[in-house]
Length: 314
Image 1 (cartoon, rainbow, N blue to C red):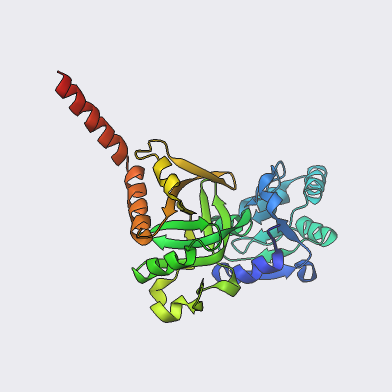
Image 2 (image 1 turned 90 degrees about the vertical axis):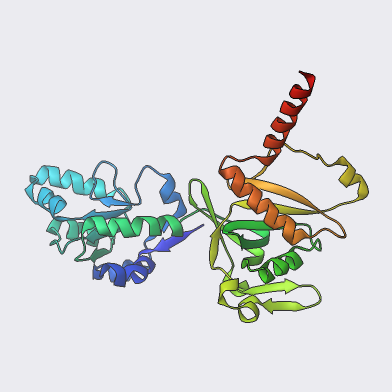
């Protein structure tokens, strides 16, 4: 399960946000924000909130003034509500002094307090997308992920069908390798899957008969990508003569594959002697881009054919 400790969050964003650790240093490794946090009613990060407490509570001057103006009974009730919320961290923004009530709460609940001179809006603006990326749902797939004409293309198929050889041909034609064999996927947004390569396999492509090839060294820096959003799946399938005869020549309906709850466009290419797979993949990507723009070549041809038949009949 994806998770991040407050210590990790602090180290990754200390320079960008000018963070300092006020209290609770020994508790930073014990406080975690998990993937499930984004699926609850609590927000990941936001201004100090007593009704729907955030996992990371950001304190600015307005919230501090509000706390200082509360009577003892109201203050005690609000502090009690915060203590039961399970919040992971408090960030004091804009150099605001931390009220004694919050300091006491942080000590009693072992909640770290971080401070920054940056505004609360900037802190939330930077940390919210960071947390979404770190805590994004993850999965892995077997295949090769490439950047082809600016689109993230996943090549799939059974073992030995020629995925890596096709990837090598595409790289030699100027496209970029993201990951070979194991592709890690993060759902970084409701409609976006981002793919990247595990650290141990980064830059490498395994080709049968040649072994492991370091694509960065062989083809240069521009031949590899760190990560890429997944747009299209190209599935390679070994074909017999009967398979070719059964193929639909003018498919109208698109094929899609469900990955982590998202429907991803899929193209099936039959592998046979004499077929230039690299050119077919490039053509599939160009056709996909045209369809995104509302241009469907198959439908255009069928409409033209139908119009021609009507003209002949009249």
